[in-house]
Image 1 (tube, rainbow, N blue to C red):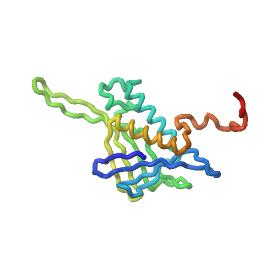
Image 2 (tube, helix red, strand yellow):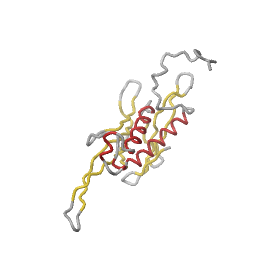
Image 3 (tube, one colour):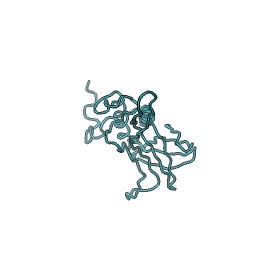
Image 4 (spheres, rainbow, N blue to C red):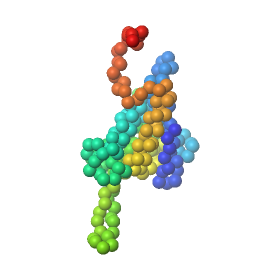
Length: 190
């Protein structure tokens, strides 16, 4: 169960819950949201693969891979280099495709901060932060502002918990790889 302290002092809890098929086998996850322990919404049906991709991207960006290396502070490094971009957005959807009942999203923002100088002129310093925002079914919003290290820890925790509730299945594996493969085929080969 991942959690974030929000800027208004409230606490957002995000818990992966297994989606099961017609015979009860878990195959993906949905996220259950709680605000200060009270049910807040359910979002992101079948979002595990996206979370695993985001976790991997944030880890790689923090290591300075790709365009992220131009940011000297690892806490400013995120996978998407557009000034204000979205890393993920999960909504509640009914079977008919209607959207409503909650949302969880993460947007990146570049924030200029003025650093006054003592013996030399002041300067602008750019920082990047992840704004994780959630809305419940009633439309009330919550926001947490995270460094890339905090986002990496939050998302990695969700992925680890999701893989646990799926019986150890690796969410980073592309779910289409085994599409149409007969599970009995190849059994017993070594």
